[in-house]
Image (tube, rainbow, N blue to C red; front, side, top):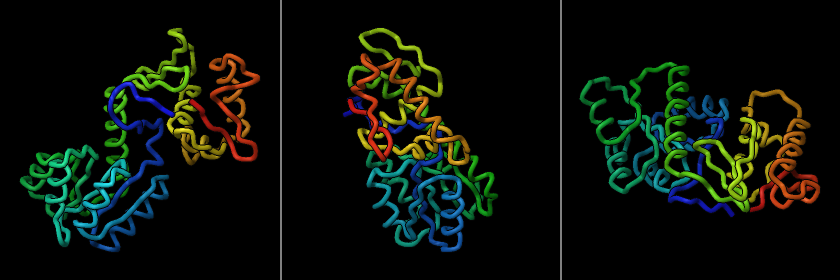
Length: 244
């Protein structure tokens, strides 16, 4: 079990691909295009076609980013955003609108949107803005959460440092990413493919043996008895998991 030393859900990622995105858009062709292109980039995507359903899904806390159209049936995008922020939800929001008037943009930003894109927009621009918003959100969460206790280890995603018994354990950047990937899974098993995709990105063509090598390195550095690991466990025929 992961025990945060400060309030807040652990959602840090080294790679923003794999983030869960909610798209609220009533134009079926635009919604489908966004879904297909975002999924092709490695994101998990859920779609709602009206404001009420969008608010219901956004309120669930399952998503990392909301792409929200302004002109929606039942509730418009500004109303959805106002309800979210009044309810204390900090879910990052990118607003979409065919209306390019300056006051519409100002309203969206003042209500708490992180970004505002006017239709029509290019796919490359949208993807760049999505990644930028997710990166900013990740950095803010790292700083807010502080060190996390995971078994005998104290892990600080902000400084990317690991301590055991108050002693600093030196890890390379990639070793830290592999470790945090497993810790963030909260005890669930990750396949070698999962780890490769989460740490190096879905387009990486490295071998699965790479993961085994990193696990060996991490055990040698983090386990008191690397031959009989307590935290970094192999699940035969499945992959690896972190046990706190």
